Image 1 (cartoon, rainbow, N blue to C red):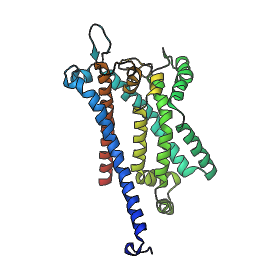
Image 2: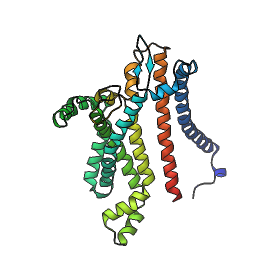
Image 3: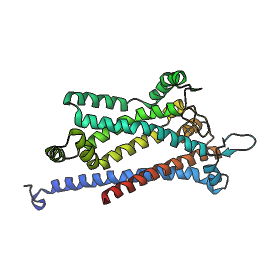
Image 4: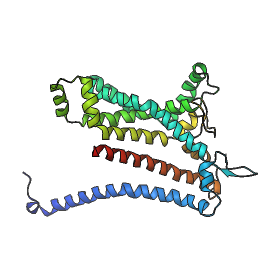
Length: 302
């Protein structure tokens, strides 16, 4: 039994209150920082919208991106939005099955020595810089796609999706394995006592019990993919067009901002439209997280 609060020294209670206050400040600061970043980006983007120089309907519905045209400047982000979403979908179609499968294998089917080795390898994969992954896409995957897939150019949607999948898998595996390990051992023991096989335990007990954590792992993978910049800039071809196949080149919102922000004059319409794309990325991320929250709440009600 711990000593009652009224019987503890005054300095101990003061230290405890100070630590509690610091923890609260850390929690609040995360929200404050996110809001501050959003307000900064919105402040830079707002003038070009309020002045009427950019029509939001045209911005969201046009595929014509000519920010430096001498004849008629056009700011159409539809092709960039579709490029970002398509690359993310391809990456998740590859990363989610492999990532969750690897998490199950590491959590439930590995011996201790192999598990520790795999976890070290996964952490090393997560530590590789994105520019290195971009070089891998350009120098390794690109020639393979040209040679074996018949792609006219190796830097395309499929290349970017493969690279983003490789970058997302370590996050999904790490968070997914933690979610599976958090399931109480009594669940496993009860299922085995009823005669379930190890695969039945995984499918009927562990995955339903850890669904919230696994969904969080997938969402972190989506966030990693949709927010990536350098790798997709180097591996997707950077062409402003709506892709009609996996072998078409695309350009994403993040890659477009990274490529053009350094050359846009500060305060110009081009500069502010790039910040408007940043606001759009914030909104896309918000929609993804809101959808996930609704899914989790729906699962809990069941």
